[in-house]
Image (cartoon, rainbow, N blue to C red; front, side, top):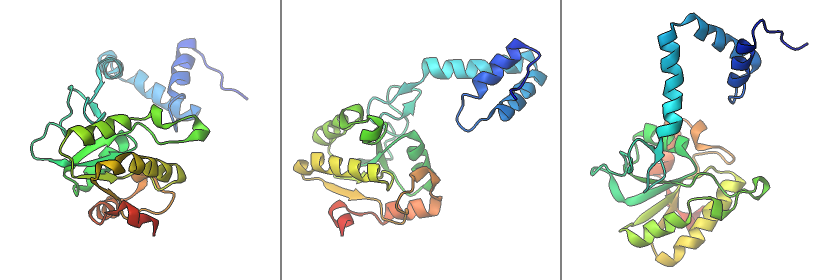
Length: 206
């Protein structure tokens, strides 16, 4: 039996919260009722925060990470190793690796991985911009840190083929991350070790 609401406004608010991943209708109702108990000013601040996020957020023109400025704070940090690029699938992976405090280079966010089943091909990702960075900048190493899934491995191999003619060092995270795992679910110690103990990409086939 569907939930009956005493207010269309309440129902609409619940419907919107229920669109969020991992939020069922019961949780959505609980969140909406919680907001109704807050002051009007707090609710306005809550709503305006997300409106500003959607309107004003930009992506770093260098690595494609989410940023408040044209170049993100990682790319603009002179203390980072600008000759090493860690290639990741998404912004959550940048956060996961940063939390390990084991990596001091730069990043390149692809915006996804190659997945024909989902209609995602190489041209849908930031692969060409990665190739251009390697060609234009003094890059010594590219670390492929994608999820150890079939799609992740396919993307790794595609990038390896694209970058091989440049002659730079191409490595991949050590297999401390179990096959089929995504980086965001790996614990910080395991992920940190997998980066520190990274291996030459060609050796990852052995």
